[in-house]
Image 1: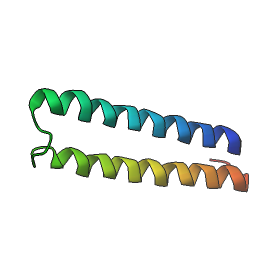
Image 2: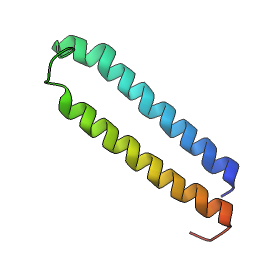
Image 3: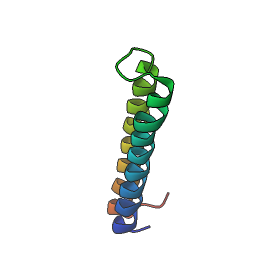
Amino acid sequence: MGVITELLRWCLGAALLLIIDVFAEAVVFEWLQWNGTTKNDWFFLLWWLIVAGWTVFSARRIWRAMSNKPD
């Protein structure tokens, strides 16, 4: 796949992750009354691990696309 395709995939994935985060913070945590407590710490740890994983995975795919190496 081309570099532009991989960049678009990364942007769409990042946008999806952001939408999930906003929904969790605005709706789920409010409903559970977890905002401002330590009960949601597990979510933020998991959130940043997923974001870091997505970034590393996508950077690798973009690097391969730029190098024109087969998968």
